[in-house]
Image 1: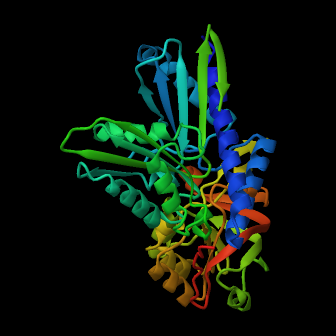
Image 2 (image 1 turned 90 degrees about the vertical axis):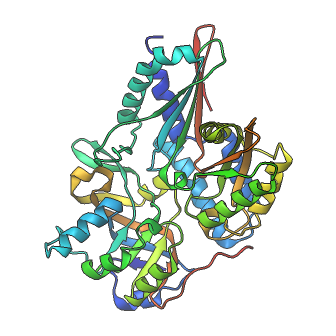
Length: 269
Length: 179
């Protein structure tokens, strides 16, 4: 596994230059369903952009985002962290990636990525989520009153309304409900790694239907496609609390996975 | 509608909120730190490296690479314009630039100020960085390179669009419709 960093760089390149098939499908379906002129124009630009990026093998968006890695099993994380660092460095030059991170106090450029070791798994598994700054500014955490699930829908809808076109809709909504403050946030990120598609829970359906009646549409210019998919992950929470973390992912919903089976490495979306 | 920069008053007057524009000419990129740098310079009565009169400011931090010693724009979509709402009017007033190009809606006060200066705000599809780069003919210059993606990049573009007129010089603002 000495060359693991090369596979990590490849995983980053894949995520930055191509969208997973389910995301492309959702965008194409939205284009078919839209009757709004502006929505059609925006979706056409998005789809054209995707083919150009694939053709040229370059990042779909100039904001190549912040990279978040989830690594299982946890005990391997320490061992492979230097390989991830090397992979990110290589990808930064080769893909290339925009130098996006600054020290929050000095404002000086400082490379950084987010790494989370996780329990479970036998052989190495790495999940990569890439998120730009535009959608990140609309991440929200609410500590709701327990036993009042309707508030969840209200909070998500009001967040989408306030955000309008700024997180680059149509967005994917990742929700972490329950757990503790930090755990809810992590769940909302992991929800964004799930494949897009029809709602799996009543809550996902309700949010999706209400959101797509807001009229925000692609890039906030109108239409019925504000949300491509809603994904909810839950954990038990303290009886006195109901944490809700909202992560909005822009239409450039980037992710990739690395799996090792019997010593063989596979990278896919 | 096809327009050329620098734009003249009579062209600006023809722009209508909700209409589509294709722009040929120069784009001067400026985002958070670039705005600050431009304004710091002009507030101290300093001079900018370029005359922006009549030109278009593009809210963008491009992804660039150097190929054979020359800069090449890889991806250059817009960034959220409303982050700079409190500074748009001063920037236009002090630089003489007439067009702002970015993404997303901007606040109503900023919109009023932009219109009152006879300027307009247009938007391009967020995330469509490669499509934007496909209209770039070349990098004409770069100033304050130490700011990296936030440097002021001067991009020569041809038929950059479709840009949607969000705020026009007559005070009209494009509003999204449900259907």
